[in-house]
Length: 237
Image (cartoon, rainbow, N blue to C red; front, side, top):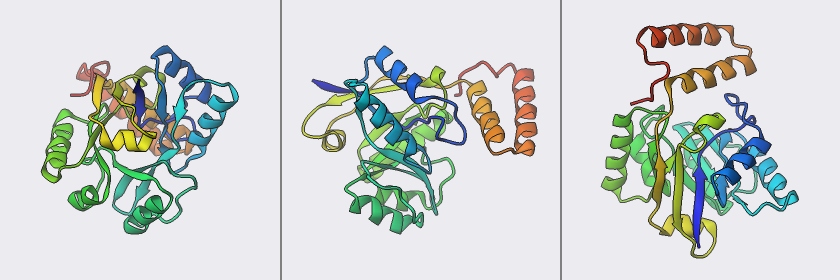
């Protein structure tokens, strides 16, 4: 029996997504997943809601509680935690996650981080494929993981239903989930890139949720540029 599922994606509990818990479960069943790691921005509310929904409906999917937090050095994912992480100073954040028995994942290392190699030295795993970032950034992440000999994982970083299955992982089921994740060779059985329009869409959702008219106008301008370049409906490369 193998684990088959996804790590690192977002729901309506994030400021830049509208994806509902019910729709997530429908998609997970459609793609025959047996685990899900929902990692909303700055909160575990989505993970807990998903965990409770799956449990109440008696759906055979393992949900691992987690979130993607914007620490003082950039985004870091905490998986397997029980309580919200409050202190986002990087070193304190690391200590608190470990104190809860969780593990640390380094998402899209070359997008929005400081002291990249220091972060990499402290986390448990490095994300070497993200469907929303340029391929050269993914290649640099692979080199980083190889340089410091860290386990790797792959992520869709989906913010909508269309890219939900951009990265489906499979690995051996050993003991519990976290042990299996850290000790197995992870295979990305689906690895495909998002479309440019999906980035715009998530930012428009963000502008709506945060009532940010400047961001909304900026995204309309970006969309127009992509249309003129005939790139809006192309995959990110």
